[in-house]
Image (cartoon, rainbow, N blue to C red; front, side):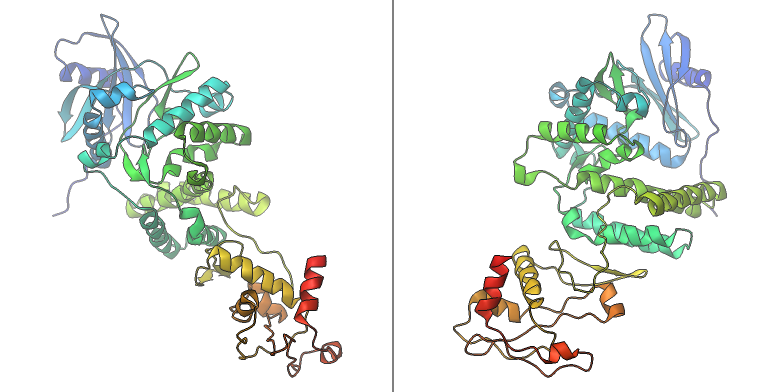
Length: 452
């Protein structure tokens, strides 16, 4: 026997008002107005009683949305009076509930303010932007007990990265996502430096619709259905929908100012992960349609993914951490500790390199440009060889995707007891000029590098 999935028809504002009256006997409602919300999951309205009190009614449209609402009730119960008193914004409180067809509709005390559209927020005054930055920072500094008491998810940075890669594998198997997006996202998920962040309490559904504005001040936050401990960038994914770089930078600047963290603890990649999450959410939306056998959702998601791929091909898209190689015949050393090469649709593993090693490798690679191309030698440095020279001889083999096409390779030279470069037998591809090249003093090489 198949489990019955409850899906409710869309309710009008007057129907929601009737549910509010059922939940709160004696409530005499004189007005009901629809309220912005996630239309796929909830029906919402603001109702007004004879005493001019305002109440928000929120009704789930399916069992998944109902579960999210039940979660919100747990979250709000964790906001003790002491926690609420220290927040720079208002949090909803529940006034009543009514159950219809196993789904509960909740009535909340209405808070001051109204949600506004993204364009209005983007063009808001500096005070409003500062308010939003302070609000998000306050959410991220909430005590973890708010999440733990409600038994909500807790994710580490590595868990989130690994989970995303696993989801990407499943998404790739559908064959419905442009390959340029799959490669782009895989590169970003593999850039470990970008995923070095401190997990925090995250709202999880924060955007312009969950933010209440009153007389140009941000005063309240609603929609607490997805609270968890995870990536703070999740609360900035909505910024990917605005083209205003100035607004994004001003908001992040306000956020960092109110987080008040030491300089070495500032999350420098938070906007990059936010943009990545916004793009990847389209693929998740596609998967939700596939899993629900909803062809309409699948078609809509594919259209959005194709538009995103076209935009990236034309403009490069937003910075999500992907590394781009410039065509060159010389090998290039990695620019950060975590590095993976892209080759067609797959990514080859390469071990992480410590920052100090990167600097040494880059310097060593630069030195080889002054010498001829020969085969590597197994000769170990003598005991009197400076440390930097010894590391030079142990330089690992680095390659770019282009190197396999143009035949370029990184050659490491050895030194003899007199600090002279040891020549090697020329390769068949070596030019006559290479064959005539004589060993030169390592001291001369250093002098030339210093002169440059």
